[in-house]
Length: 484
View (spheres, helix red, strand yellow):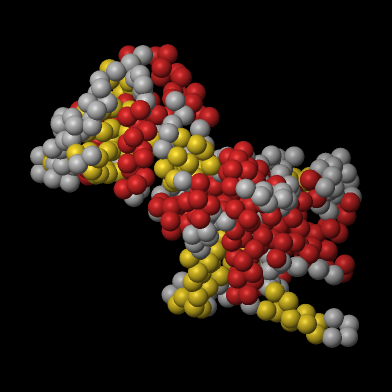
């Protein structure tokens, strides 16, 4: 925040009457333990009252709210041999993005500590959770009704509701967001005045109004930011696209760190990815034509899924597309909420429902539950190896492979394709058969034994099972996924 925004915020905080669970005034008390305990109480109190931030101010009298100035200097303060801010962050669980601000108000020095509201769990200081009861700081465990209330609020809180930037004037909001794109993508006419513009953005939870002016929510910034680098930690959440030379990450040919909001930059990102993909030659009856290695529909859906289903609480990383000579990998932070083997039949679950709903409304992604089906269908139609859905320690990776002859596929590749074919058939109210698998792999009718071997391997691996066990004819045997 700049000096104008800080002064506006200070004035708004001082005008508030009564005790607030997310606001505390001090004059010169700089006890590190007091500060740590107060941060825990304020952060938890802010979440209880649906405030994006809590504030601890030095230089303001608690009772009168008069600015009197302070001698407290956070940059010089220490706990033992450790800098105060570093010590505070280390003693807090989970760690918070604390921000000290200094400003002059009527020639008096004020220090303001901005504390993010608790997100997924109560904030602890030195292993203990605190809360404000009136003007007093108490241990949360001593007030079980408050603890239950806080957990209820935490369980209902989502990343999208958080604030990316606050203390803004309406003109500053409109300068940071590509609002014409919002109205275009949601098929709404562009309002003729600023007030109506702001009202529409607020109605879709892209903005919220507070005592210090307007705030851009995480939802508004991540979708419609002209430049994500303006929004601090969200800068690392832009979609990165990297093209490598060969089949490994040794030599990087091209890299584009995305800096636009997802809605603003989605079409350009898909176009950029497509332009980096290798071409293959397709021979028709009368002419040859070059086609992209991977179907665009699959890329669109998988990239949209990576954006929507990522875990925004994992810092320092964001969604990424990596292009190799033989494959394309799409990675997003966080473990999926659905088993990777059940993505075609289980109802989808997302950590970011508001983001998902708005992206579906803008036709960036497919309707609920249909996306992965389309990805697998496209792989079969293009005669590509089955995509792989791999769970890593803190990420989900989807790999699409370029076309490979069946004879060059590994046993795992064939079994995975057989399983996904069975899933696709099942959700279409059909069954896998030797005939359908031969079509999937373009195996000739005279070589049905090869399809039978693949089916046998998938049965042995436990991925598929016989759907009609009473059938006596091997030729007419039907199969379905193991979970059917």
